[in-house]
Length: 417
Image (tube, rainbow, N blue to C red):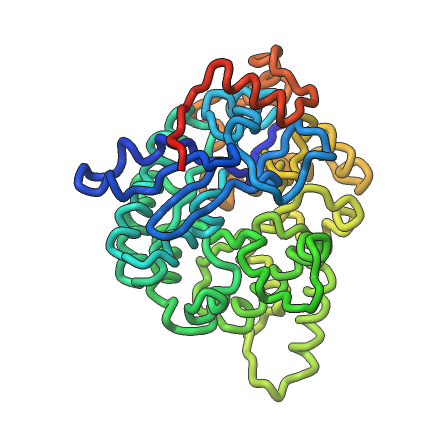
């Protein structure tokens, strides 16, 4: 088995801006500090962004999971250390990973909502440079570069998109529902320069769940509701693109619904087709195609664990399914992602050919990424990767024990806020 995880996450290390911010801006770059409670916080302008424990719970006992603040010292080093990350990927049998931000927000919201947009652009570019030139370049062939864009300025969006694509970025991460951040919806022609550039450069647009949660506006909503309903925001995002009509206007536009799951897709496809055939008075025109066909032409459907929905792989579209491990979040399948995926696929009656599509081929093709450019296939299998790091400890470790280990030999010493 070969595994390419189309959605994982990273916790940014405190020195990430050091080599990428011009000298005159270094004093105002985002900085990671430790507060009086021993928890870590990123500070940028007047924003204070704490580290959420749920974002890096791998190997914690489940009773310690939660939205409470955390610190690098409490996390498994693979969350923030690139060398340990690769060792953890080896243990999980994962050849390559696409890593979404934490401090910057899943789509760069930290920089988009800052006051000084000129300063924000400097820091956003520095983030992209760090991600591509340090995080991804440290181990060629192990990461699919992902970038952020300065959405407040469309000219700057196109310029930065061209810049990062030239550096090797294969995807950009965008808001699911941009109107929630004060931007036009994806139905607006304001996005035309962006969509045009995305098609010209063959870059993937990633819509990661969580960025559109404000669309779920119910009284007394709790964490359980938010976390379960977050995948349904993907349904809302699809409608803007499908009927908008971005998917018809830009045949080359590619959208990955990151961590959106696949259970909503069969119902949605039936619904949009019946609606289109029945409600002709709305004036929509898909030509000779059905809306479901147009959706499949543009989409990558990313899942962690959808064993029941996977049984409908033919109805969803076998060429649009892609697997993700979500390391180091609370939904992560580490360290047994291969076993978890194989169990789902066997239960769904997937052939070996389909398993290959789901585990690596679809994601690689969609991103225009050569899985074996740097690592030959026989060295990229689950077994071969696990053999490279046989000593990785996957046992449960409490937050307190993590902190004790960290402080015995700290890789970073943070200033106190």
